[in-house]
Amino acid sequence: MDAQVGLKPDLPPDPMENPDKNSSGLRRILDAFGYSLDGLRAALRHEAAFRQEVLLAALLIPLALWLPVGGAAKALLVGSVLLVLIVELINSAVEATVDRISLERHALAKRAKDTGSAAVLVAFVNLVAVWALVLFG
Image (cartoon, rainbow, N blue to C red):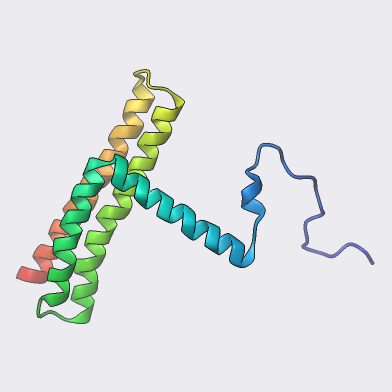
């Protein structure tokens, strides 16, 4: 029996799919790590908000680790700071994608950018809430 249940047949590559998505193993992991570093460098170079948030993180993360609170509280404090950075990176990706498609003003482009900005705001509200609850109970 040649056909195995559950395995996809060998199909020709889809010309609309990124050929790099087919790499696997250690090569894929190393490539993904390199792309991630490229993304961080691009955000630091092109995104003023991300640079400001990195400076805030450089202050708050050591403070969180120094504070006399338990390990779970430290994790919440650091996690809330990292969440702001994560959401800002995603927001920057959305903005770059929208700008790549068109610089023309459009209601949907505005909605996409405003929604990404709102996500950053919610992450900041979360940061303030977590820090307030941990520090002031």
